Amino acid sequence: MPSKTYGTVSAEQRKTMSGLEFVQGLADGTLPLNTIARTLGYDIAEAESGRVVVTAEPSEDLLNPAGTVHGGFSATLLDSCMGLALQTTLEKGLAQTTLEFKISLVRPITPQTGPIRAEGVVLQRGRRVGTAEGRITDASGKLLAHGTTTCLVFEG
Image (tube, rainbow, N blue to C red):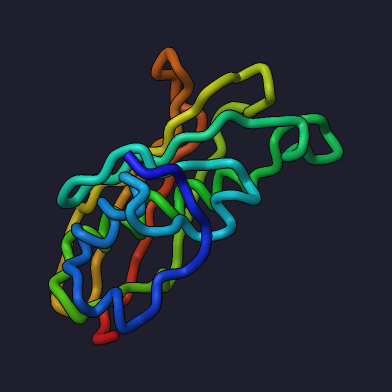
């Protein structure tokens, strides 16, 4: 398996792949991960049609003034896993973008939480709009945050 690299995949290259091929390339390292994954320290661990898992280990670099991991970190993980789950359902030449998402932070995350996983699953995929849900859990399966998203599907 290739080591992880970071960057962007050109629109021309993305158009040659199905959404599933694209996301699996991110997961297996044959395509570069987006640079925010490097900045925040997360990885795409699993990708199959309609489902994506993103993993991370929260660090002290992510703390808010209260000493817990900033909610924006959870928001990013959920936005990523839910949007990429929808991406896996797209045919060649189609793309998606988040129109809106909502999250609920149900337990604090700290560096002591240890490894976490964000799993996104498609709820519905239409011609122009898709929806997905996501859950962040700790190593014991305890729910830390959850959310839903609505994404626009378009040619691109």
